[in-house]
Image (cartoon, rainbow, N blue to C red; front, side):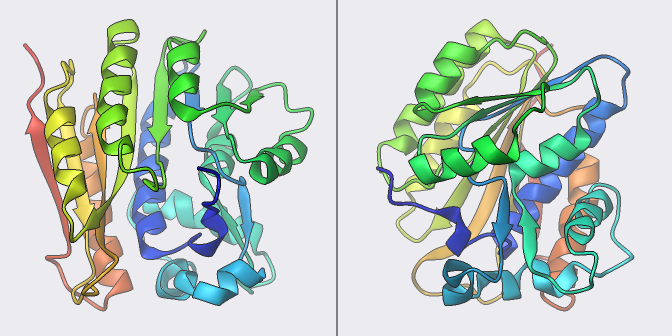
Length: 282
């Protein structure tokens, strides 16, 4: 299906948590001089216009990034992420928001690489213009699972895969763990970050159980966030599954996630949780 456009949801509270996790992962990769590669299977538009009709129609960013983007007290990871938001909005008016491709690009050094996959024709065209003439970026218009099968392992054998479907197609909850199992068989040392919505129907639970069984060398981590008063219908929370998280990522994500929850919702400390689904293999 090609109906989903993230512009309606860009910068919402789920994006804030997801992109903070991504910022932390990028920071861990940058700690070493060795090159790294980021593969973004559902890349989206790159940068989102928060003054566009779709963003204004839902206004979701007002309950997310708009609440925290000018805060100066964010912990590691969240501070870099907010720096990127502020860099896109130098006039102190929040009108643009960096998607995952823009955050990854901001972290790249000369020797690092970014590989983007986007099937939607409009988003692909937007990305094509945005990434033009940047030799560090490769763009593919193909189905995300085909993207993973074809491009893993990447030529730079150190890095991160981000997978954040819209889950409009129900069988994605089943096909995604199988795709990651195939990817891990070819690239065991890669970091895999999977975003998911928490819905009342509970379809995400079977996917999490399947992901927890993957043979991850460095373990499997879950970080989940939910507003203190979630709606009765729709998205009640959101989470990230990190396969092969870097050393000390769990501690960093706990601090950053707790700060996000407090900053977004005026102080609650029980709205974000980090836990191990599978311990590191011996």
